[in-house]
Image (tube, rainbow over all chains, first blue to last red):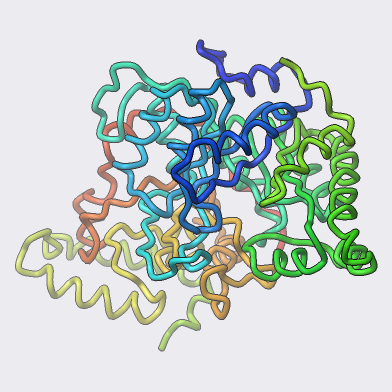
Length: 311
Length: 167
């Protein structure tokens, strides 16, 4: 990695730089003004994860904002990954929020394009997309390294961000996806969290190309995984959630399992996937997205042999 | 309509070059705020609208995006496809439409001169230029004027590697 570590440094960054296999997990934002609802979910995740992703209006549905969730998390000593999407805010709001997040102790930022408004519960909303994810990344890097806003105006104390981006190895144009990763790294990404990796064969192909290009040496790649709740949930995800690919053999395996044991089987599949992913060259960690099943994350991390976590 | 022309990206890139050269002598007629502007806008809208479904963003990057207008992407992305592209290469938002970027990528592979520019990092849009003529903006370097912070940030160049046909 070319950039030197600047103090204060993110714990997630330290763990990755030390060569540990990192674990992050998604905290889905509650629909509540009670901070305890955030803390309840955070407590179970924090014991087994090196970073907690605060999702920005997951699936374009309205929830508590990610910046507020991060503020709650840093206040209690947790290590959040602040997810920023381009869907809802223009460049003025985004730069201001990023600086505000930094002032509240947020060190990890994940820059995303964001699902479209039509994917969520308020499809009538105006889509913003003033930035795309790459412009957002480069702007965040500029704020940190050059210490200025887009206009060139100086920031008195620049933020110390560890910058991340998403990657979807499974979406067309497949040939170009590794090059898109290169573009994101050039724009400023230091760590990558991928879309759900259910198709291990294709993920291996992708990672081969990524390591050929030397990209795994320029950014830490965390592979996305998650437990499937049931065969129905798997069908829903692969048909309705943008960018998710689940091979037939996984859906069939769930279908063959009696309904009451499907959640357990989904968890088992997730653990097996983690074990296979650990064997793949260039993978620096995993990112667990257990939508509305956060209580399973501790078990998954434990049974995958990833405990205890480094401090 | 002339959308079928987009299936010939190499021809379009040659046309693009010819067009730029042939407009050069007419440069003095292409003035921002001048009396000619409404006329230029009308011609640009008609021509580029027919072939590219041009959205008149006023800062044309067609030759960097496989002669495919990125403003037809519902998210108005300028740096490549999002992660929501469907397995059949169609758009996450408009399932009936081919993803603009899937098209842009495969067309870039067929463009010997400008294809490599697919990898270049595109700056944030200047929303003030919407509806104006990108030809006028190009001749007067209006579209290349970037915010100071963006301009002064250092970059590592990214290469475009041609890797066969996809999707």
